[in-house]
Every structure is written in structure tokens, then in C-alpha cells.
Length: 224
Image (cartoon, rainbow, N blue to C red; front, side, top):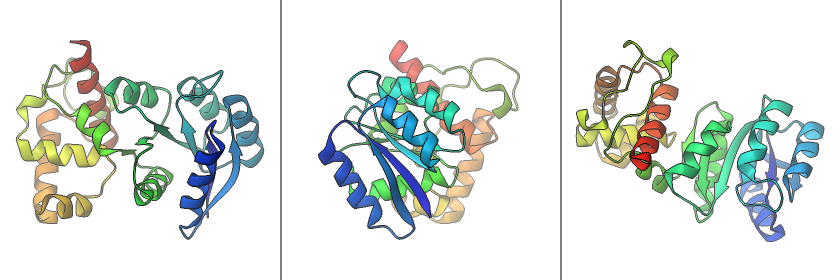
């Protein structure tokens, strides 16, 4: 059973999220919070597996509350929900400890998929958020433990083919190779080939490293 804490300052939104999630077998909403302080107290009490956290709330924002929630309940995974799809918000969410970023206008099925993805130890980003991060631009700084190459700037995303960028976007959204293959209309083996190629070109060994690369490239593109 995946235990979820929902934090949003609008009761109707919380009710909608509860309705969507509890329609999924194996998922239960154990508590609802309307602000960050209440979320912290309820998280400590209920020890949820996943925290669905709104960005904009009165008082402390979700982005500021996320690190404290991670400290209070380190085993919980945080899924940010927001009306904003720009790369800066996504980058701040990940830096705050979130494992995913979902837009509030996403379909119910996507919310369920995102909760399952982050609970399983992966990441999930809404398509607009992922697309905003995979545009061309200058590279960001690497995470040393995810690289084979010496410390320094990551290769620009321009070194990737269009299809490799499509695969990278799918990985950043938390999709499996099979799901990426179905979405792009190519074979599972072809996805694996593109994935191996982009890892080699970027000098990154892990899926988490690829996701961070996408975030860093998006951040650098905005800062530039």
C-alpha cells in the first residue's frame, strides 16, 4: 500500500487528488494538510511514502517546506504539484529534494503514474516541464558521482541527435524504456541503443545523473 500525504491550501483540490489517488488499487491518502506547518506535523505522525506538495501556499511555500519535510521524513518521496511549468521552478523543486514535478492540469492517470514512479524510487516530470528543460543551450555543472569524465562542464545537448533528445526527455519524465518506445513508435532495443549512446556522449552512467543533466542544461539555458 502506497501511503500518501496531500498538501494544498485549497480543500477542493485536496479532495480531487484524494479521489483520483484512491481510485487506484494499492494507494491510500493517509492525511491532508492545508499549509506547510501542518504538513510537517502530519508527515511526522503518519510517515507517508509519498508527499504530494503544492508550490504556492500561504506562509511557507512548498519549495521552502520540501527540505524540512525530507529531513523530518527522509523515507518519503516528494512530488511537487504546480500551475507553473518553467524550468526555474522545476530546478528549485529538485534542489529542494523533490523526486517529481507535475502540473495541476495533468490528467488523473498521470497523477497516479507519477505517484507510483516516485514511490518506486524513480522520478517523474510533466511533459511541458521536461520539454522546457531539454531545449538547446549551454551545459550546466555535473554531479561528480554520475560522471566518467573529469570534473568540469558537461557536453552541450547539441551533441545529441534529435532522437536521443527524445529518449532523454522520456527518461527525465520517469518513463521506462518500454514506455518511451511505445510513445516514440520505435522498438525497445532501439531505445536502449539511443540511451547507451547519449550516456556515452554525456559521460553519465545513471538515470539520476541524466535527470540532473536535463535540469542543469535547462537552468543554464535560462541563466544564459
